[in-house]
Length: 98
Image 1 (cartoon, rainbow, N blue to C red):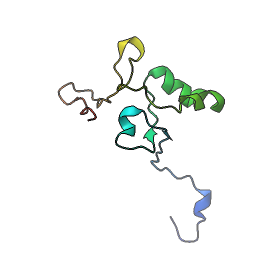
Image 2 (image 1 turned 180 degrees about the vertical axis):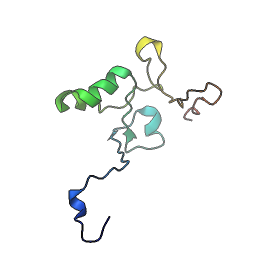
Image 3 (image 1 turned 30 degrees about the vertical axis):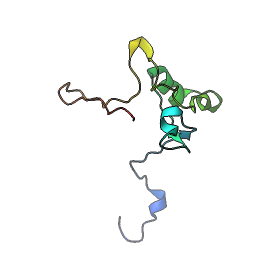
């Protein structure tokens, strides 16, 4: 930026992220009793989080059910999380919690 230019008046692009935590479920609580990340497991939950009013989105701040997760929409499997990849040869499932 040229010398003497007020940086606060220029648009800045930055890659940022954050995550929301909640009380742990039984599996996570065994290794981390204070908190676990909130996991949005289905496309409808993603849409709610991104588009709904806060009064609706806040209902998603809850742990996954005990027992390693629940079935998602259209039979999708959720938890343990799987790495997503467009190439099936590089996709793999994350190891189960012990």
